[in-house]
Image (cartoon, rainbow, N blue to C red; front, side, top):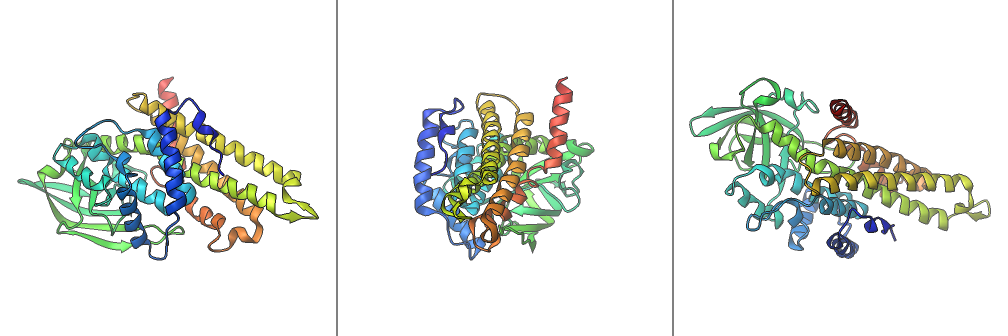
Length: 382
């Protein structure tokens, strides 16, 4: 059984503990799913999560609006990741994909949330471009006003749920000012004429990913989220909420790696004694446990701070994501080492975790970018 003592920390309330117990039971019964067909698996996971109510925390309820509970999002991501990385992906993208609508959408736009929270529509967040990944302010895609419409032209890449999404939240340059101040956000349904899937992208940990092409894709003015020119602020506000949850997913992967390593050490014999008796093995286990607890403290501090009403948690979220993802990579690498040949055998859980964790140090702000964000926050406060 994984360590559950962190749920007694003062970051949490009784409803968080109850949710964690209920989700644990659900995951044990339903996960992992068959990953043979990744697109089909993701569609099935979204439908399952929606059917059983687990997608409700990803977006506000249009009929009963209230703030997102980031601690709930983090608990769900951590738990799902511990059981099945693809389940975590399916859950997380529903939240990230609709975050702009939740935070800045009109009541009409927020009707999409009824579908995404029920698992009846799949969402995607289309921000990155071939020539401006981390440098969002340098994006090239344009949205030109044409009467009561905007015409979107350009490309987006590394878009999660690309190819299976029902709606894309797309960021494009509307030109009110140079750089970050000239970007806007739009809701673009998948069937929009002029939007096409230019390429499906394969990675070491398979997920639905695609490069999108926009050729004068026409969307109505009502598809604009917030005000024209607010796109960069909208994107950063969404990431401010969901960046902590990336750390939570990494934490889930790390916890699973630690659990598997403890089991391996207790069950395996080396040199006539349990592997767990070797001091070097004990040292590795201690280092892994330390990294897991330190990551958990940073992740849930950031989530708690946001839930307590902080307008922005840029510093806290960046620290949580940077530390949790980087140290999870180290924890999982130690787990592979402790499992020996089995650790790199295709289909083994540690091999899967090794492939899953690497992308988390890149998406939603690469580790090096997080260091820049943290440094600017610290120096700015001084």
